[in-house]
Image 1 (spheres, rainbow, N blue to C red):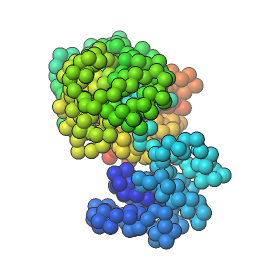
Image 2: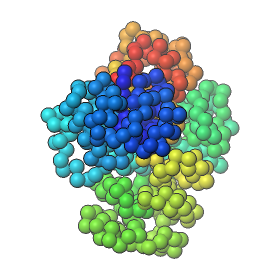
Image 3: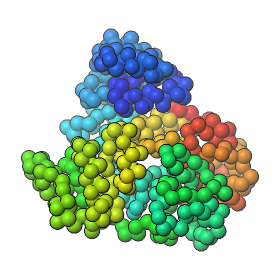
Image 4: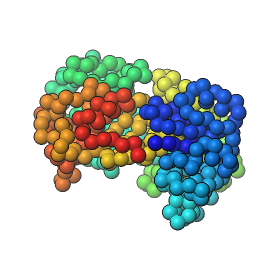
Length: 456
């Protein structure tokens, strides 16, 4: 398998690193000579210096033998030209292109099969917006993943003072939640991911990933000590592309939205585009403004300006003033764990979210879906239980299952009924099985499934 990546910014570099770690043949095109020299030392890949819109450069990067093109430069035009060249001079089965410009939304026909034949359009701002929506859907969570068309969700919750889970092991928790379908799929502790077993304890400061379904999760959220009030009133800081997208989508859900932007001209543009959102122009973000707009009574405060330092500081200020659920958009990956530790409830990194989306797409094979979590080394896998696999017709406790993976949910075949599994749960052939696994556990999971998890 050979993959050609055009553009070695944060998104391109992350994808190249992940694919080379999985022994996939990777070629990278990058025009910045200084960056090329560094990439050649950091990646086990062929790095070619040049423009992604140059036929000569792309040929040098093995485009004629590539089975996938991933064009993720900062230029929409370069990405589109690379895709056009790939379709004109060779037959590449899969093309993924990063497009950010809004002008292309009204010309989506050019991406279809009879024209550029692009398989996936990736927009980091849109993916960040959708991630924030998922987080808002689960009150009080730090992270959220949806699988099986939303029928099963994994919510990540921080364990704070007063939580009934502190210093209890999973066996004790299970005994106290017999009337609630409650399963902790994993624990994130000081940046390290754990797939817990019965005697593992929950500690203060942990982030636990809990299985939720489509229906009423009030008992589970109550047990976690989460804010049970559904999100209805939202304050957004920043009239960025992401801020605009988010406000539009929240309007469609009939939420009350306030948006704060420092640029007066941009405020006028937003007022014309947003029909229900209250747009506020303020040259600075300060305590007086947040107090006057009653930030403490808002269900969520979301900082998505183009200044990530301002996002961090405004989120911390909103939290100090009493807002229950603050979310910050952060571009610098090194800031993510730091910001979470100092009080921001949820952090969204557009580049990491985009990478997760691309990897989800390119790694589809005989499975339904694979979702890479944006900030931890884990994946959520949705697969059909085959008759020939070691997964079926036996209790889960009797399956020789990898330590770094857990069955997080089962959708009963033909019924669509969601089952939160326990040790005595039996999986039937045809069931959809949701697996939460550390990335290093994938080969062992594959053996149990007896179905090759093809990357392409």
